[in-house]
Image 1: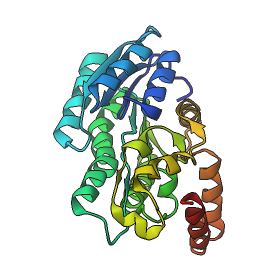
Image 2: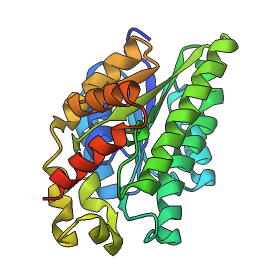
Image 3: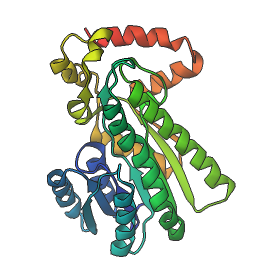
Image 4: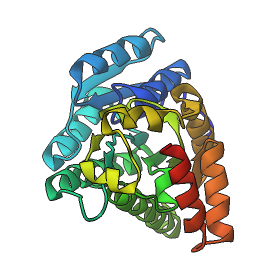
Length: 278
């Protein structure tokens, strides 16, 4: 997909962060957009920002952890726009806890959004992407879909799952010579509100976190890349049909480290985690 002009893109988690930036930048390129989020107020602002570029913008409150809602939205997108060429399964949430301290209810919340939301979005839109004759699935994994990190076991599990799911999908599409492709996106520290809205369990204190109330600020200190810059990297990756897109220097470094020392990298992560928690 060399051009986004006159294409139609569906984007989850579009109320803020990378989702909003993707919507606006696609609109700037002449792409019509269908956006969803659970925050209707922020979603309306994204609709306004994208709409000034003269493309058709539709919005819908969708909880991506609800399969029926995602499928109904996919059908609405095609009914409203006549087709759908791209789906960006971007919605995601964070949760900090040790494996021992992790609460099942919180873990199910994370898995429902971060993993099942991607599965539902992919499967709901895939027939429409095929019908368009020029489709692309873009699933947001993470730097934490490349390597493990303390206090992020549930988040790690979902993002590793997204990576495996998307890579298997890409292989299947290639084998079938389908008119659809797939890309797994791995952002590092992006300046979004995911850290601020993440749930934190007191068990992270066993891993060195001294003040849970301030832990969001500690995490955000590590964020270097703006959502707009991240969106640009992702869209360039889609245009070159990349199988994997690494966003940020941290993602590129850790990807290399994991490849070179696939098991002993864990000692480096321990040092990095302790430094970050100071």
